[in-house]
Length: 123
Length: 189
Image 1 (cartoon, rainbow over the protein chains, first blue to last red):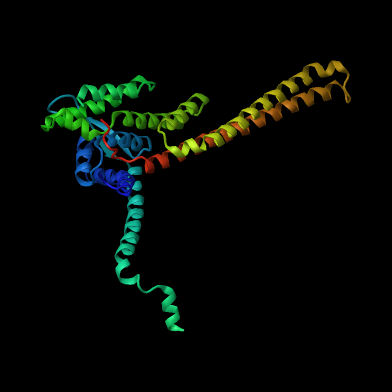
Image 2 (image 1 turned 90 degrees about the vertical axis):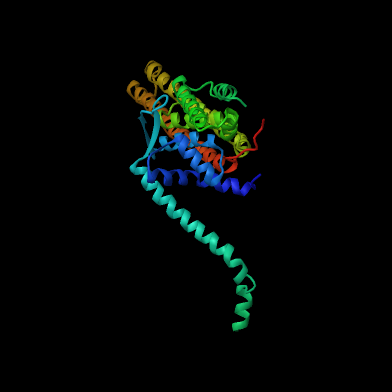
């Protein structure tokens, strides 16, 4: 069972992951869901509320493609607004991840020297 | 859980949504099962991976309610959006409920006052001229018109405020729901 913080983090970046996947190529919900659940281990059913939200935000649009077996398939394509959202969110994510990275990594090297003791040494 | 069981629980959860939208959603999940089975997974595996159908239905319903509110801003879509959002059960909203209720009460009171002003203005305009008012009949008619205009202004301001309030609640709920409710809920059987 994953820790709560892990779940919350995943849910927060789910939208960004979908945008990134769709920026590479158009796709349908089952494929998106299985690729995401492989990579970040989320409930596959969550993809549908998410796709609906992105559709109503105008980030993705759908079109139907004839499927060799069974009924035609609903494909999702990123809109111009979707590309912009990806850029903005991607930038934010990078900044956030970098900050967390440096804090987590920096913990071991810089923690013993607190700013206070440094100041005291200088004076 | 079998495919039929999952679909029927989802369908039950979506009751109250426009039938075409619900059918669209059910279609999505049916084709998810089709794709899963075509890949050689069992119905139970696909259902398990999809998650809890009751919770998915609540989330889909809230999403649809919010979308409808953004499309048409009227009292019925506002009520639907707020109810759907409350259905998500994000606890923070429940804490906010008493505050929300009093604000709604104030707004309703404001509307009642506006209505009263309007009726009073109408009365002054119609009956005033016959009661030999100070300044003459014409002044009474103008005063009545003034009252009615003021009441319409109050109602307009209240409407803008109400729309803003609903938008605020919806925004708050979405924000918190996304963070509070895990994507992976322990699979309640």
